[in-house]
Image 1 (cartoon, helix red, strand yellow):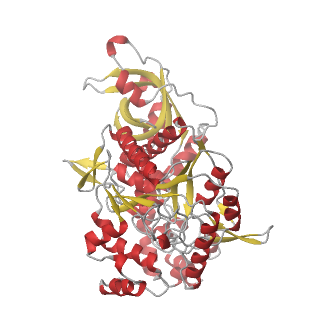
Image 2: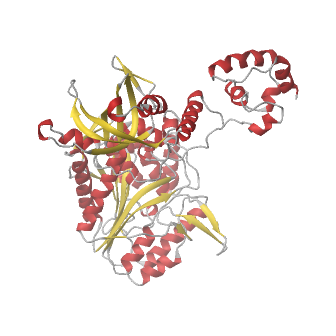
Image 3: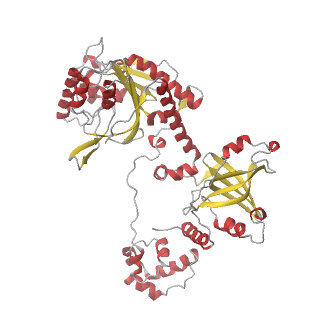
Length: 571
């Protein structure tokens, strides 16, 4: 591992603390009794409150001024200024705690606990006058501290790849990121409260499934050794939740992780969170009304209003929302009447539009592709798209009055699908035939077609009441409600390619060349990370660069001779 100058210095400080008998990682509880936001909101100098406070958090800044200093502490709820005075911390003759530990051995990023009282400085800033402090965790890596000057921000931790890989750093230095995930939690808790108030049961269903069903998607496949059978990470939890409706629950819901082995972009991650819930004796018209209420309630809970900014648009989440049939929407935005075309004619029309289609796509798939190409981007305000062709919806009840269609809707907002709902198919004979149609599509090469689930069909044979169900993408809903354009911004740890790590030979490998351990970090700082790189180096250049690195790293050891350096390189 290659350590920077700062990392080496912090490790040295850790050793100095240990040598002084100070554990930089103590085990005992630190009894916090207040948080920064509470102090800033409630402190009143005339009332004499907050005179015995204990806070803990991360040091985010210092202003050392001789015998008195200021620092900034960041806890879970915000930041507050700390005031340290040498004679308060060290009332006796020994001033080591202030002069050495505080001034020399603490760094930005260290976590400390402080005891003291709250006061207002001459500049009018509410601060904590520290009587005692305790090191709770020494940071060995420096934070990317953001600097501001003349209204400009410098050294911001803003590179997306770095932020997503090191979300822990992102959360420390970018407070707005933390707010996104607080809002995400509120979205879920708001919806959960709505369902609990209605008496619906929160449940858990299998993530590992023998049959991948409930959606049209490519699954992740694994193998169970003991059972010697293939298993799939679920692409949806729909079929298990319906089994529970068969079993006698009138309403069930689950917030759960789904997994789809498909492409990644700004709105797709292979692992995502979905809410699905099912309610007996309801239909998709009832579900549209409830969906409007859910989205309106969530917007109000988060923002105190129902109209919020999303990108360049102002989106109104209060209902009612427009309702368009999928064929009507395609006709409106593309001029194509899909109801009047055969499968081959529709395929030809897609090719005419420059779309990539193949013979494995049935009419339903072609309609879906055409809708995505010509319609989705136009649906900015919340809009229900209804009454899909039966080929597109193998789990949906046939439309009560429109031949060849099903009772399904999708909710689109800001050009993206956010929810998908049905009047659920509960006829076991019809369901089996639909699965068989899916098997035929799979035989034609559709790797997203559903598999046959015999046990689910058996459950329907015991009779499932008329039911409506819906799936809502929590990640996309959070994107909307927090005005984010990328799904990675609303996932703590989005999926990413493996991090590229430079090849580095071990210190023991360098030591076998006769190189003292004191010079190995210097060589690494010079970019010589492997013996192969050392073999290719120029002895004179290495010798000269070592001299400069010796001063930079403050190495006390005597310089190796040029002959010694040449021997390292020649092996």
